[in-house]
Image 1 (cartoon, helix red, strand yellow):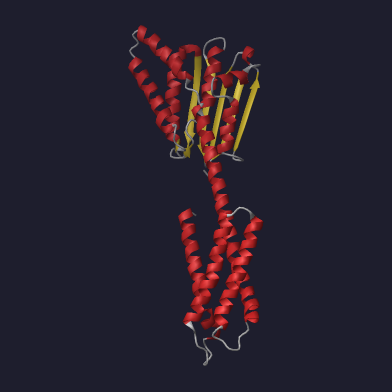
Image 2 (cartoon, rainbow, N blue to C red):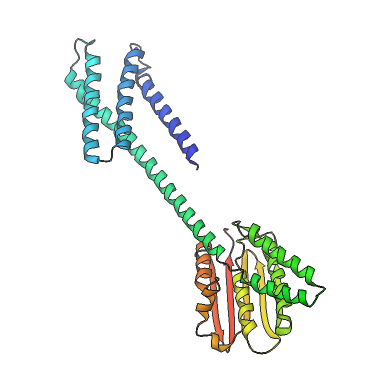
Length: 336
């Protein structure tokens, strides 16, 4: 519920309470034949008790010293009760100001404590919402920071490749430049959004793979598959690319040619699966995490982003065996 709606409900509540309070004597004794509703008397009483309530509201809100606030509130309420009773008994020959004072004091205490409890409850809700908003802003800022660290170092490598192809007068150069342009457009425009359609993310990945194929030529043999039952499913942009970029990075420095690299993306019944498998040179195994961090797509950043986006709703398994690096990611998109 928005703050504006809370304020509207609070105003309605206050009006309803005082209307009921004003006409309560009618509801209680209106059926008696001899009863006469004194509008002026009840109006003055309403003015006194409502004034005590809103004065209490004001001092509790403005003054931070609780002991001083309670003392002032008690003094003001006693004064209000006394003045109210004095006003009532001056026109009543047999009325006792002492009896009136103690009976009305109980009434004033009940109404004031009721409203102060309501105000405290509302303040607690507003503070909680402010904390939740602050936490959301913090998480969004952190996510934006992490997302900004998805390093486009492939841009540097790709530009080098395009430069080499330009020197060789490669006929496919315009198409490669177009794919690079599409990649940059996606990162700049779609990458800043909270969610994008899976179809756009897959297209971005396909263009990225195509550029890497052109850059690495016969160095790597890529096996890429994507199967999905809902291409319109929304996911955070650039969520999968760090794992894929990492695979190309390590495969590119491995020895040999036609090095196999497997990328498999699946979406079934709101469950997103990514499997990446690539070879790597064992001499990089000891400082792999350091290299990830230096590339700007560190494993720590990637894990942190997943934790912020999908707490308790994802599983990331990273394993190495016989110079094979495997990443298995499962994300439950059911509630996102």
